[in-house]
Image (tube, rainbow, N blue to C red; front, side, top):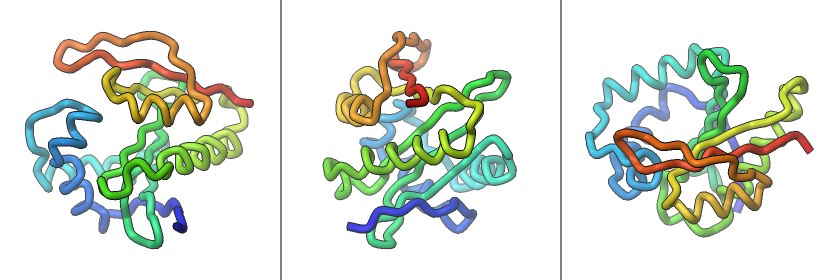
Length: 160
């Protein structure tokens, strides 16, 4: 299987509508129960595409769009955070997340030489994602408590 990362464009918007409104994926990533409208998705993606601190890529497998990965400098913070979702469930449990996370982390540390770490947050019950992140070298730092959703692990990967 040929795994690649391609630059996010506005033509990918319908994929986000499908993925962000998938109840299984929402339970694993954000726990939101409200559906996200196509207009709201278009606004969010539009902001990301204009943001110089957001690096968005579509994950492809054999040229089929299957997921999304984002590296973003957090507002009012010095650190960058990474987010990944394989939206097409038939591509789960195939090691694609690990491959993509490794590539994205290498890209990040190669292109941001002054940065010493990359963080992420993952819901504590998302065991499959936690295993992936640990394989890539992320370490649990602490639990983050949220009012409207389950706790998350704050994880960090440092430059090797």
